[in-house]
Amino acid sequence: MKVTYKPLPEKVQEGYGISRWASAKEINQSLKELTDKNIYSIPADKYKEICETYYDVQCAGSKAITAEAKKYIPGGVQHNLAFNKPFPMCMVKAEGAYLTDIDGNQYIDFLQAGGPTILGSNYPDVQEEAIKLIKECGPVTGLFHEAELLIAKEINKHMPNVEMFRMLGSGTESVMAAIRIARCQTKNKRIIKIGGAYHGWSDQMVYGLKVPGTRQFLESHGIPNNIFSVIDEVRPNDLNMLEDYLKYNKRMRGGTAAVIVEPVGPESGTRPVDFDYNHKALELAHKYGALFIFDEVVTGFRVGLGGAQGFFNVKPDLTIFGKIVAGGYPAAGGVGGKREYVSLLAAGVAGGAKKAYCGGTLAANPLSAMAGYVAIKKIAETNACVKAGLAGDRLTDGLVKLIEKHNLPYVAYNQGSIVHLECTGAMSYDFSSKSLLTLLKVLKKQDMIMVRKVAMEHMGAAYMANGIVTLAGSRLYTSMADTDEVIDDALNRFDTVFGMVEERTEAMDKQVAKYKMNKYNGVNEKKYKKAEKKLAKIEASEAKASAKN
Image (tube, rainbow, N blue to C red; front, top):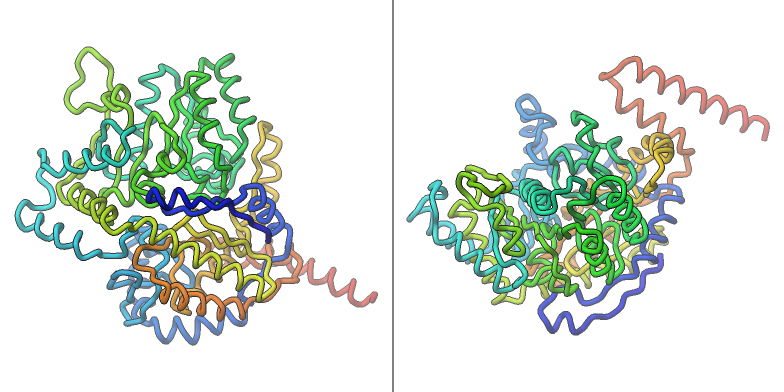
């Protein structure tokens, strides 16, 4: 693994949490090399031992309650991030850098609820204001509350380009609203997104999700194909492909309404971009009459108070907010940007002018608005973005040393407090192309991707059994609560897990057959038998080859 960084000390001085910028080319090359290699993961016998000695014994409470939950909740959990191997963990306390489960086990929390708690979980000052508001006002009134104005002004203070702000209930809703604004403003329909990017789960955005180039063929079940007729997907960090689509849309399809990006790269920087990518992408969008949308759900108030737009010195037309904007409390979302665009979301019955309709019973409720306002104030007072970013640097540098120590092909890098640890390369494929023929590659490698995904989940289980909570075993968010002592403790635990890892030398088609047998066992007998037959054929072929030798 080779990753070099360009130091950015001036950004830290300005209060931003990213002190260096990694070479996107080197990271992408390292990720490609990772997917070309065998899987390095927790071996089956060790995973079985972890399940039997830790999860079954020390996490019996979580096992029991989540087993019962499966009777009433699809999959046993209400949140995608909570679906972990071998079973979901039931947490009862979140405080600072730690989580505690129902059995009393404590964990270093690098999930941080998926990113909204840069101050650390359940930050006391925000909690106190939330309790005060609940007692005095109640969490929701359905009418205006002063906190709505306070948070809008506070955001504008740190992000001057966000001249107006409409608070909504989630990032997903906010993306939907921003797209409507863009279509109203430009009178065009087409939206260009970057392959692999996550912009919520609305019908039109579940396209090219997680893995670039997969279009509607990976996660888009239950969505009519015609929904995607006005959505385009381009390769991450590829300005030429972006311009090709913008140009073609302008000449042949009436134009593009908006280009929407995650500023540090798709999937919170899992697919990194060059430092100047956003500048150039904005220029291209405007050149062809499209609005430029920054999805700052993750980066807003994490990269810095000025967001990624301040860090990159880019002025997007629209900005999507989520996570930290509600201070770690529910109903976190919003759209901000230039007055002429965001005013299209004006509340009330439409008059003569067309407006982009949006709403939500709990949107901008007093509790969420006040928690967000207080959190942003506290982030400014405590320099939380810089502290969290330096913790991310320390964690990443330590992981790189451990990867070298254990001679593993893993890839670790960070954008400040957003830390990436790619162990199996499950989501590191890229099938981006203008041709539909590449979908044959997607279909061919889909099972291989799932085998790598299961291996990634086993790594996540091993981390948790050693007291570390991650996001799907591959991403870690640091917060202000992560002191040097917390980070060093975590690295010792990672050292233990990495010491268990072994290379899987078994042929991939054999691993796929075993994966399918496990997947369909007790669910689909026909497919199970087919996988069983495939495995038997592979093993017979191996035995024959061995006999010859």
